[in-house]
Structures are given as structure tokens and as C-alpha cells.
Amino acid sequence: MPSNRQIRFFLKPLVFLACTAPLAWIGLRVIGFGPSLGPNPVEVLQDEFGIWTLRLLLATLAMTPMRYALGKAWPIRFRRMLGLFAFSYATLHFANYLVLDQQFDWALILEDILDRPFITVGFVGLMLLVPLAITSTRGWQSRLGKRWIRLHKLVYPATILVCWHFWWQVKKDATEPLIYVGLLILLLGARLWHNRRGARVKTTGPTTS
Amino acid sequence: MIIRKPADINPSEITPESVFHGRREFLRRAGLAGTGLLAGSGCAAEEDPAEDPGTLSKLEVASGSPYSTDAEPNSLEDIMSYNNFYEFGLDKSDPARLSGDFRPRPWSVTVDGEAELTGTFDLDDFIRPHPIEERVYRLRCVEAWSMVVPWNGIALGDLIKRFKPTSRAKYVAFETVVRPEEMPGQRRGVLDFPYVEGLTMAEAMNPLSILALGVYGVSLPNQNGAPIRLVVPWKYGFKSIKSIVRISFTEKEPPTTWNLAAPREYGFYANVNPEVNHPRWSQAKERTIGTGFFGEKKPTLMFNGYGEQVASLYEGMDLRKFY
Ligand code: HEM
Figure 1 (cartoon, rainbow over the protein chains, first blue to last red):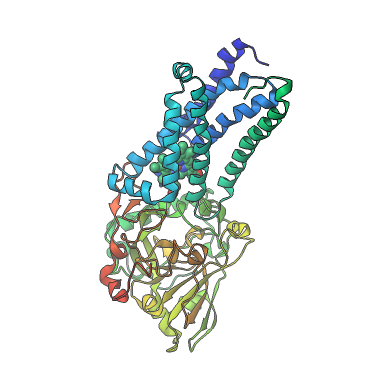
Figure 2: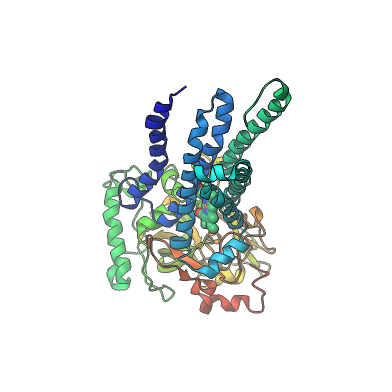
């Protein structure tokens, strides 16, 4: 198990760098280093930001099962950073959609959000993440107390919705979104399994959840 | 090789200048092809193109056309690197990367159904009587992007007349080759292959409809539907079926691949229509490929701007119902 110092001065900076790497790589490609973004760069940005949002969301959700598996609490200390990075990529994904893709055509944007099911669920998913990002600070955490935990359960419907968004935007071959759906089911299943076990052993000792 | 006519006209005399420059740009790139940059062809530039079917050979293009748009064509690089051709893969970059094993020669086309002349024809014989024209057409994909492509092709209507369709022929059906060993996307079976498409007889006879054999004055690259494909510029791109091996004249409306895959999203007609909404993409505007990060989206035009030539085909039809 890593020590406090190792986490603060080594592992956290490492995870931070790892989370910025996709953005740095996309940035390099935008300014002409690395493989070209191709004939439709706006679409590539949309897809890259979208897929990294989803990966980071799943990474965030992996911390609790990891804690169960290891029987140690330290993975939880990475959860906030991963979650905020997921939200940052989601913001870039949405900003790219508003600015470069739809070019602020509000009528079309509204039509998309209301009438195109895959966009509707993506948008609702993003909206559910907003309060979580806002209340991610220690201050909010202590102010909300128990309610903080309840509020942050919104991450589950949000992730389910954005997986759905990914699935629905695929024209035909849903293999890739289904892989992410599978991972999500595993991560949520691990919680259920742990909690049921926890309920059974409740009388014999305290559990954390 | 598909050389139909002696080079008696200097192409710069009959080609819009931008296209001509594009062609020169291509030839420069073709030089690069020998170094292996051209998707999968892996041939040396000095080789006789006829000996390596993966090589693009030069075409003799007979004339410009009043049907050409004067919009600036996309670069050959854009045209060759951004393709929807599920036979090779799902990503736009897959057809360029994964079509290297495809052999567009020798090739034959079967004509059957309601026509007096039917049979299987070698491609060269199939197209021999027809001059290859340049047609610079707008291409509008149902995914809300567009390009301008300087096709080289023959008038579909002229070709159809040669086979003398009977009075029962109401539709023309087309079929793409099935070669899973050369087409990795077919091995994955994402769509029900063979890819099939169809037009009404009147649509097929419209002078805008062509069978393309080349682009920018060279034979079609594999990823663009070598060696022969349909181009119907007033319809969404998926109607313009690629690598055709069969043309059938039918009495009934033939099945079409995307309609079978998702009937509520893709109809038989699939005319470009900014007013008929699609559940995935608004069709009101389009992004022009090759305009970078800030290219302004343009409003999409009814029939992709070809209304003057084709609107009469659909008179009295409810285009919301027959989408
Ligand atoms: C947390 C929220 C979201 C996540 C995790 C997410 C994730 C994704 C993913 C994984 C893709 C597919 C990328 C690929 O094809 O490789 C995608 C595509 C897309 N998303 Fe999102 N998305 C989110 C929110 C939104 C929102 C709010 C909008 C717009 C209102 C949006 C609009 C789009 C569009 C337009 C595409 C591209 C479709 C295409 O390429 O044709 N997304 N998103």
C-alpha cells in the first residue's frame, strides 16, 4: 500500500499527467504534430473528447470496486480528480459541439437536444454531472454531509445515460459501445455484490460503502 | 486499361482551371504512390499500370459537361481518405487503409431481368461505346457533410438503352461485389452483404445519373468504389453504390441495403431534402469537408441543388412519405 507521501507527491501527479495526456495529444495534432486529424477535424475532436469522457467516468467508478478488492481505502483518494477530469472532457465535448460543430445555431442546437434521442440522453447525462462537479470540493462535502453521498449517486444514472448516448449515435455496429456498457455493468455489479455481502455480515462488523 | 479515346484534346482546354490544377496535384501525388504512400497499392511508379491492378491508370476524359458545378472540388487526398464504404470498415479512414488487397481488374458486370439484352460482360466491353465525361458534382452524405468531386463517368441512361429494357422494367437494381477475402468489412458482416441499391427507371435515365469509372482523370481508387460505381448527386451518398457487379431491370421496387438495415431512417428514395428530418442528423445544414475547424456550415439545398434537373421526377409525390 502506498504511503501518504507517495500518493501526494508521486501517484497523484502521475494520474494528473495521465489524464491530461489525451488532451495534450489532441492539441499537438491540432497544431500539426503527430497524425493529422484528417479531412473532418471537428468530427475527430467530437469523438475523441466524447470517448475520453466516458473512459474517465468509468475510471472514476472503478475506484470503489478497487477499494473493495484491495480492502484498502486509498483508491478513493483518486476519485475526485478522475471525476473532475471526466467532467472537463465532457465540457470540451459539449463546447466543441456548440462552437465548432453547430456554430452557435441555437435553433438547431435546441432541435437536436429535443428531437434527436442520442443527443437528448447525452445532454441529460451532462446536466446530471454539473451539480456533482460543483459540489466536488471539500467545503461542499462537509456542508452537505450525508446528503453529499446521496447527491453523488447521480453519477450512476449519468453514466448509464452517456453509455446509451454512445450506443445510439452508432449507425450500425454497436460493438464498441457495448464493450463500455459491459464495463459499466461490471462496475455497478461489483457494488451490488459487495453491498449484499455487506448486509449479510453487517452484524459481525462495520463495513464501509 | 480504360483508355477510350486518343488524347487529342489538352485537358486544360476543357476543364475548369481549378480541376485541372487538382489533376496536376494528383499526378504529383501519384508520383508519391510509388513510395508506398498510396493506400496499399505498393507499386513502383514506373510499372505499367495494366500489370498491377492496384495502380490508378490515367483516363481519357472526353469533355466537360453542362451538368458540372463550378464549385471548387475537394482535393484528391480528401476524396481518397474520407470514405463510407463498409465493405472495408466502419471508420472513414478504413477504406483507404484496408482496401489494398482489392483487385478491381479483371471485372465483369452482369445485366439481367426485364431487358432484351442480358448477360455477363467484361467491363471494357460494357463501357466501350460511351464517352467518359467529366462531371463535377456535389456529394451530400446523410451524415450532414458534403464534398465536391470531379467524377469521370458515362451516362447511365445511354448505357441502359443499349440493353433494351422491356416495358415491364420499372426499376433498376444494382449490386456490389462480395469478396470477403479482399474486403475486411464484409468479413465482419456489419451490413447484410451484398450491398444493394436501386433507382426508378426515370431516375436512372435522368442525365445526371452516371456510372463513374474515375475521379480527377484517373481510374477510381479502390476506396471510392473501383472499378465502376453509381453517382446520383441529388440523393444521399449511400444511394451511389460502389464496385458494381450486377445491374437488374425489375418490375417491383428492389430492396436497398440501408433501408433494410434501418427502415425508419433510410427510405428507398433518399433524396437530399433539408426538410425531412433524420433521427440522427439535422439535414438543414452541411459541413463541407476540407474546410478545417472554422469552415462555415452551409444550408443544404433541396435535391442537393439539382432540383432543376430532377424535381419533375417527383411531381405530386409526398416527399415526407417517400423519403
Ligand atoms: C458526459 C457526457 C457525454 C459523454 C460521455 C459523451 C460521449 C460520447 C461518445 C463516446 C461519443 C462517440 C465517440 C465515437 O464515435 O468514438 C459521442 C459522440 C457525440 N456526442 Fe457525446 N457525450 C456526452 C455528452 C454530449 C452532449 C451534451 C452532446 C450535445 C448536446 C453530445 C453530442 C455528441 C455528438 C454530436 C457526437 C458525435 C456523433 C457523430 O460523430 O456523428 N454529447 N459522445
